[in-house]
Length: 405
Image (cartoon, rainbow, N blue to C red; front, side, top):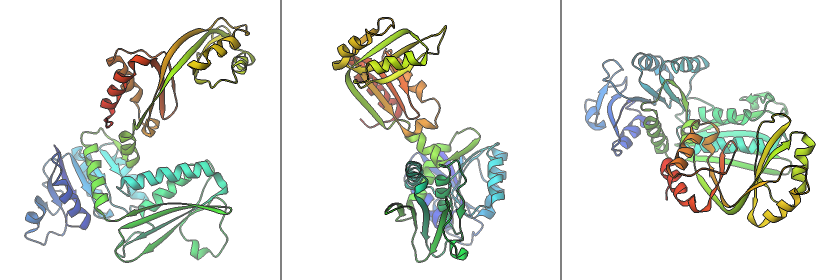
């Protein structure tokens, strides 16, 4: 069971975190912390001890903070002295605050996200991918709307989205916060952020991509602050027992999306060519000979003594044609493995999470399966295996990564 303390317990977010934690048997809130302890019955109302500060807080696994930036120094001091994990959901941090958080993360596990919503984290990924795909011909503008009581503007989430967008371009993309005061045309590569405040809106964020004669808009609306509390509690469960370091919602999402899809293509063949000349023209000639065939899973060894080994897969139906075409080349006769299945394990989280390959190959070992060919990309591992062995391997991978059957 993960033991949690909530800083800012009497605030709207603090109360929501405590309420949701009460319905999760894997979590327990042992204390709430709030400088405004004026309600005698607050402890009974919250269902946990209520403290005015961190002094006297019994050992906990994680402290969740939804309070104000002024509370940060005491939180960082407590975390670094006791090794307690922090989940920081407060916004409005200054540059100095951010540096202090980074320094503390060298001594304690610290999770930071200006928005604890999973949906917002996905929005950031979508915005990043869209800007990368569309290129500089599309202008990017970000807008956000929040309730009238929100103090910081622009929101930390809007700035996070702006940073996600600008990270796609090696060239500087200035983030503009004062467009109305400029009275000048939009500059190339600028990303502006516009803020609106009013009513009781929990939070709306929009990323607009404006091209010539077309517009793409990506948006997220939080219909209540419950999503933020739910995200914070998932972050707390994730952080319990984590080693010292700086953690983000992107890392949490990556871990949850290590494997999201398993693909299977039946009846492929793997062709292996040993001792191919490493001369670029010779390698090109191999693929030119079979350019009418859909070649996949290409791999090559490091050249040695002027030669290398090539391997690739082709559809079983095209095997005879491929062998005939390759026979005209000066390369040695190919070694062929027929009637295999191409098994693809895919997940966006692979791109930033180590250890996925080790876990997948452990699954193969559990089933006594050796692959005939393996290729990878940032987010995929593709293997050619015996067609009769795919079912136990797939079931093993599903169990390992928690995929629904």
